[in-house]
Length: 203
Image (cartoon, rainbow, N blue to C red; front, side):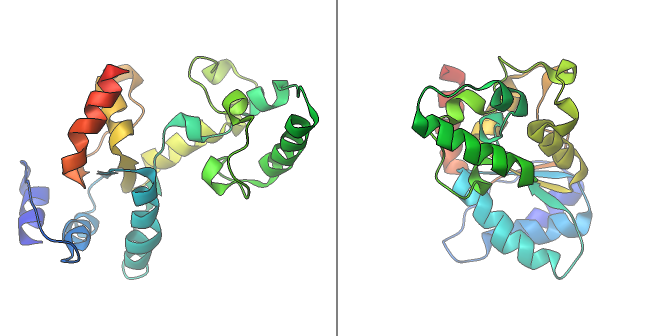
């Protein structure tokens, strides 16, 4: 924790290793929270993102007030324009569509993980696709779940991302970055980063 705190306050790079259950997460989270600095924490998987937010950050936020959120790739978010343009080819798709329309009216996030059933078969036709996105020209822009999520990323002190999304972000030009600028970058599960970078660069 002392090593993390010194690096967070003074800048530079720290590579640290410790055994399971020794408190690595709190060792970097507590100094970050107390510093007030904007931070991106990258984990190996979406599941680990959820664990970090629902367990560690949730617990610490009850002790000291700070804001945090999870950043995922846009394929995890529902696109309202594509949903309303979708036309079912069979009864199963029609049932999924009806259920998704009802969910879209209630969900605050549009995140597939918050959907009460397993990911629907028609998700490939209705998720937020960068190639189909009209951005600010879209009639649903003000309601867009993906762009609302990005606004949350910009406001939160701690943004929990994953290695895939920071790899993609690193390859984008300055004017098209998807993650907000931050003072501190934490790579949790750093041994998994090279595979994530290789995979995204390969794509």
